[in-house]
Image 1 (cartoon, one colour):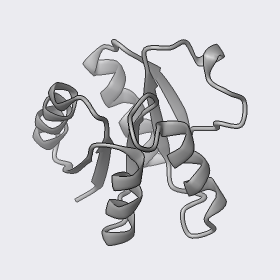
Image 2 (cartoon, one colour):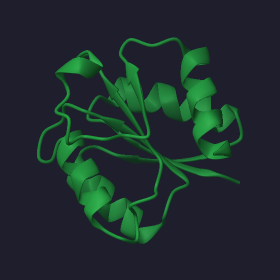
Image 3 (cartoon, helix red, strand yellow):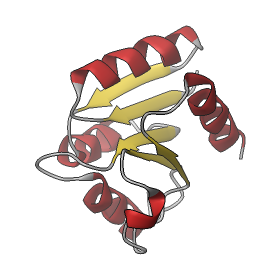
Length: 118
């Protein structure tokens, strides 16, 4: 069973994604900010991270930069999600894929499947 980590500070989003992705057969872990996300990854490495860009404590950019700087996690696929357009995200923030909120659930499932396959 593939493990997904959803990192988002909005409970409604994490609950909805957990329900949807669990129904698709994934084991879903949740963290409320980047700092907690890094801790969860160290405890149980996921196959994919779904990462919100704007969060308190440690935002998505900071978490992604920390993952890319660590040789153990450089290749971990990260799907970055944000209400901001991709062009507003700094160039040093290099996710595996990007989804603009709000997104269609079919679009999310397609990206998750693509990232896990590749």
